[in-house]
Image (cartoon, rainbow, N blue to C red):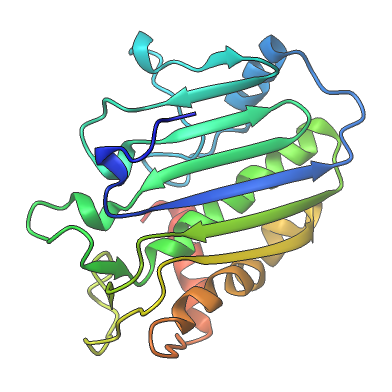
Length: 225
C-alpha cells in the first residue's frame, strides 16, 4: 500500500471498491492479469484499473495473494492511481481529483459537477465485466470521496450545465454503497449511479441535480464525448 500522506493526495482523493459473489474458482495471479486486460474499459482516455506497459516502474506487481499497481510518477493527481486487484473478486482503486490538477484552478477549491457520475459509472461497468468473466452474480460496491470540506460544487468539466455558484461542502468525507445484480448493471447504470452519487451532491447544501443528468452524462461517457 502507498505511504500516506503523499503529495498526490494532499487535497483529497476518491476511491472505488467492490467485491463479487460468488467466485467459485479464482484464477492464478498470472491468469488474472490477462483477465484484467480483457475487462479494461475504453469509456475515457484514462480508464480505471489502468497500467502503463511502457513504464516498468509503474507496472502491476504481485504482492502476497493480490496484484498492486501505483502510477506514482504520472505527474499529476488526476492520473496518480493506486489500485489493488484480488482474483477472488475484490477490487480497490484510489485516485486524486482531476479538479486539483488544472493549472488555472486552486487545488482543493472545487468538486466538479459531472465527474463523479462518469467515474462511478466507469467503475460499475468494470465490475459488471469482471463479474461476467469470473462467473459472479452480485456485486457489493462502494464509493468514497475525501477532502471535501470547503470545496465548492462547480461545472468545470461541463460548462454547458448551469450551476449557481456558492454551494460549499461542510463535511470532509462521503461514503456510499450498494449491492447490485452484476448482469443488470449496464442497463440500470443511471439508476445505480444516482443511488451512489446523489448523497454526495446532497452534502453541497442539499443540491439535487436534474434527474435526467445521470442518463445524459453516462451516455456522453459511453460515447467518449
